[in-house]
Image 1 (cartoon, one colour):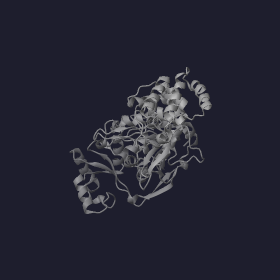
Image 2 (image 1 turned 180 degrees about the vertical axis):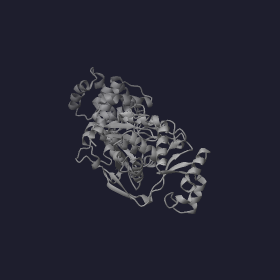
Image 3 (image 1 turned 90 degrees about the horizontal axis):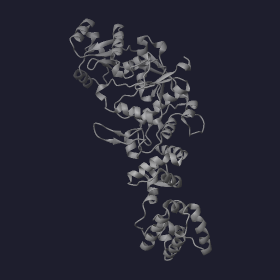
Image 4 (image 1 turned 90 degrees about the vertical axis):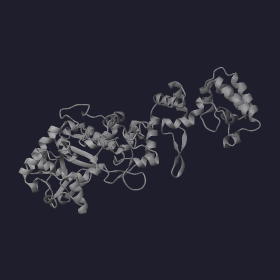
Length: 517
């Protein structure tokens, strides 16, 4: 197999929102395909009709559009291997089910759900396999002629894969090496159900991967136990020579404790586990998304790429094209990757700082509008430039912590005074108590007089008047002036703040503070 014919796929089920672990799987497939000049296929696996959730497919497609992960063929794109939605491929699967039945590699089973439940209750760890199938209701015990009559009469049935026990099945895994599982531990999986005329995941997955000429199956570690079954299915179809190579990615683990990452972890610690906000059509529950939380898509991609893969150097910030050049499945970890969501803050800040103030301004204008404030993108960009290097305090389970601004939404608590004048002054506030004394009101009156005479109320114009006046009079009015304009001990350079507010608003705030304090 040459690298020029590499074909990989991402095949989610539309059963709910796309988990961030699924995004990472898709990303690794994308990087592998691009690195080898291959094709990346988008397939929808919707054979489980009972779990279908309206809107989930559109949600998945929109998630990848936002993230900038593009497919070469598939649902919504087209290609010569379609259709790419499994529910539209029923006739294809029926042919291959019949092929296995005719070859004696599969059989009809008529056991009802009640009968199977009763058997499980009678026998601990019951498994439908070589040790039990001859005591069940199937074409192996009833005979093929009777089984066909039952099928013709409309008796509900499933088709099961006939697994021969005692065989060591080897899976050649790019990440984990040779994985060997004995076939005796496998059960005779259901491949097709007459109830809805659809195959199960196992059959549809193999048939589609073969017909779509998939060369590499890159998926999560949770699918590793099913891989020996898939190897056996490839052999049963006579497709062993075109079997794809497998690579099972490490699990994403909880930020703390044991186990894999779940939505409950995000709810508990305050971070999303879905790329976009999800509105559950059944429960009405709303789950947060990375986009709506203010993450930049390139930051999410960079953060996810390094959860389970190490490029072999110290570089952490990488563009998508750089990741394509460096990516190597063999350098993926076999062990689970702990989901360090705080590191995600850092990545977002780094990419936030890389964007120009003008690029960030529309999002800040939208944020301000939600607070009832209307402003221009030009003024929003000025505030961003003055404040995006500041530090905020946030709560954790271990108490308050500080971090640099990582999101546009972090700016509002720090920037409110740019748009809303202080109306109250907390005399118990440490900054006010320290910086407003018996002489402060008079100093502010004198400063106000100087400011009123400034014609050019730009930073340079104000500085040209006030700096000489301060030096000549031996004054240090900066903190008391900050009390007047901000109401507390935060904010940018006072000249920059005054220039942004303008002369009229600066003087008005000073008058109010003098009268109030």
